Amino acid sequence: MLGKVKKLCNPHQNLLSCVRNLTATEVSTALRPFYFSVHPDLFGRYPRERATNESSLQQLSSVLANLQAAKPIRPMQLHFYVKDKTQSQVSFRLIHVYIRERDIRSAVITILKSCGLPTDYVDSIVTPAETVESDQYKIRYKNDIDLTKVNKNHPIYAHVIMQKKMKEAQEALNPNRGEAYREEIKRLRESITECFGLREIRWECGWNDTHFRGCLLSFKSLVEHHPEIMHKLKGRILVFSFFTGVSLDGHIMLYSGEVRYNWLDFLKNLSKYDTALTRIPAFEKSLSHVLRNIKIGRRKFMPKIVAGAYEENLRQITTSLSDYRGRKPFPKEWPESLSDYEIVVETEAGPLMVSPTGQFIVPATLPGEILVNFITKNLEEAGKKNGEYQSNKYLERYLIEKCLVEFQLAALNKEDNVTPDLMIQCCKKLLDNKEDLEQYTKNLRINVSTYYSVLSDGIVCIPWNFNL
Image 1 (tube, rainbow, N blue to C red):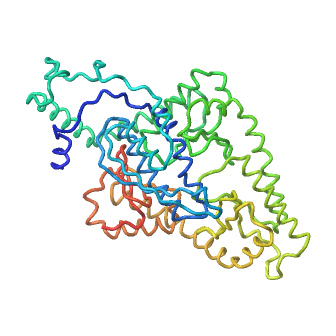
Image 2 (image 1 turned 30 degrees about the horizontal axis):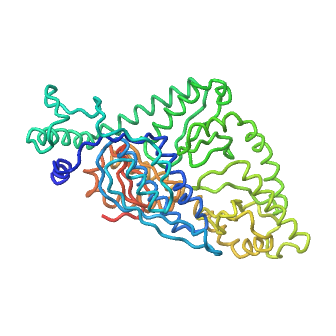
Image 3 (image 1 turned 60 degrees about the horizontal axis):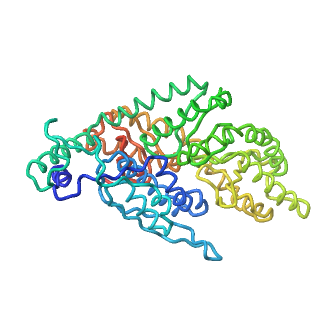
């Protein structure tokens, strides 16, 4: 800890800078091309690359939040996979983003340049001249002497800077800071829900509480300036997520990285998206009928999709199966009914697999014959995995509750890609090492993931297969 304070208090560093920080909206706009290049949904068939990008995006979110708040960060290297669009076959390029900047503008430029993306937007944002004076950049010694223009080599200046940085370090380590954010988020959630008639507000994009707070404030301001859209929100569930649209559950999804204008355009045309939602049950029933009454499910532990896109996916795969049935019958080894099994239809980028929960996960563009052969080969495995999942989910729930009590945790959550069997392993390992861990866990908020990190709101992320 002493080493960290010494590093923060280095008087030879450029501690003052009259450069305006980018706003949260400007950061989101500048990095949109980057997010579109590395978004985990682009790697549906490639779990290793997807997991790498998910983990790095989580850490990047925390880094950007700290820089936005002018807090110090440790230099770190993040790794992202980017699809190579110049190749005829699918290939990936691994890029390394090394962030050591002390201001958000420089960090954003570094991220964009690492991917070979233009920085024109950031360059176009005017930076105030270094001679600009304001209260924001003035430093006073004991609220009396204005040291703004004092030579930085002056001993008094160095003393004041050291005090200032030590205070910032103490605030950054303050355990109550994360709790204060959560209290404000709770207040904003309740206020917005009540004022606009929403049923609930959810946060499902995986970023930290600082970003959630910013989204709530932006949404509140948007509706207050455009009250004509308020009636569209009544009785609905609002979810800040990785895309904008209406989910299969009828929830209003807003991409947390988008500008408010896009949110407004979507909300004004909400009825068009709702219309697609009403047609989905008929498409699901049609697919189930073609495939011997199989259940049509939605993929567990994965992000939601837009209703309109899902409708087209169902239409496409139903047509492929109908064409197959016009040429051949289903295999003789199939049971008369597939009602004990479940199929999930995804986009063309989705995987072809049996999920850990026993579902058949298939891309919408799969030809009928390949789909039938895949189901034939995996009927036994799907049944076995489904049975294990039904048993595991109750054991998982029990172990989570036990960990909360035994370790006196404030919260124990997991990310969507951590399945029940992995969470069970994690909880058992925690309990097996209770004597070594319990002294550190009181009132801690733990999120089980695939990486180690401490988010700016105090949440501790650990991988499900952590090492002591």
